Image (cartoon, rainbow, N blue to C red):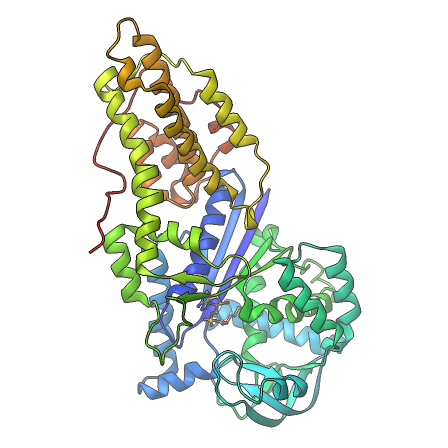
Length: 518
Ligand code: MSP
């Protein structure tokens, strides 16, 4: 089984910030979840380089566009690496492999008649690099709904994509594939807008300089940056050995760019599929649009100076560790339709409650007692039927979290079950009584075994700490298998009894040290 997921490709006019890191981190957790389950996973991220604002910011800094793009693309690549992102490829739209694929695809769309030459007169949102239909422009009061800057009037000769021709086919597709656009509220918004009618979209620009991909056969026109960008998802898997990954299982994005992914992109694919040799270019299975991070209840913006930028993120990682940041992003983030709030006090509260006091403390208690009462070793894998039944119950729970991320809360529930079990059985009291050695060993083995199961479910979100747990449990083989993007054997590993007789449990320092409010 293959699983292909993508993030947006990010504009290189700026460095990564929490928004971009968030989408990429959520994608990383999803990718790890699928690899752990043994699926042949392909995880793509990268940079979108041909936007006009990239040209503008380069000019402001007195740099050539290419060197500004190189510098920022490198900042994205190295930041993602530093933040533990396990992408399988990093695509830049300025790369030859992408440019030639785009060129071929647009030529084919000209040949089918789905791209034609016409005149455009209308509004443009230059911050978003987006054409705005007349009706919407007045509704927005001629200002960008995203950044508030005035829309600009554009009148030019353009090539157009015949989007209007696909409205019925697209509605039918969305209808028969109810999961195609998620969450449901976003799906309904998109459906509403499609039903208002689809106008053809400009896909080229003239007079915009020479930074971009030239329109085939018309070097005075550049392909519109959004059309160029969307195609990245297919140019990355064009090589024969990667074709098996297409169609993508998931395009993970935020709500700001849903229209492009849920309407324009699938329509382009419907058009291109008709071309002999391009039948493989089917529609992706799912487009998931999350919401936005805000800061202390306020929108983040340059002018307010309250962006959670890279410096801030590095500070958080220095203080709490990378896994703690990942945990906060995943559990407090704007995955659904509500925005997520980034606040220092909330971060600390979540860190102490979930990580220090629950995940860390539970491991510490179990390994501490094992060390004191059993000399750190499990001689016999005898289990307590009660805890085991509780574990089965948690595993069988059919709750579904968006994007298949339910493992995270299940893992936390397993650890809570350990704590409850310890409270109930009180091994620290039992040990003082005669003839309880067997029972104490059984209790502690069952706790450690449950922690092992939890660690597997938590690994995609907390890879560093859970690999540390595996090391202390003598289960380095899991990490070895998963290293270098290897595939796991989750179903086998999740069988009760994986901790074998003779296993030693190393105590070590706290996994998540408690941190006091300053
Ligand atoms: N280059 C286009 C995407 C092309 S995809 C074919 C683009 N780039 S972007 O750099 O502006 O990134 C937008 C994406 O960054 C959002 O869709 C989202 O994934 C992420 N975020 C940017 N700011 C965000 C928040 N404040 N909160 C959450 N995610 C946000 O658009």
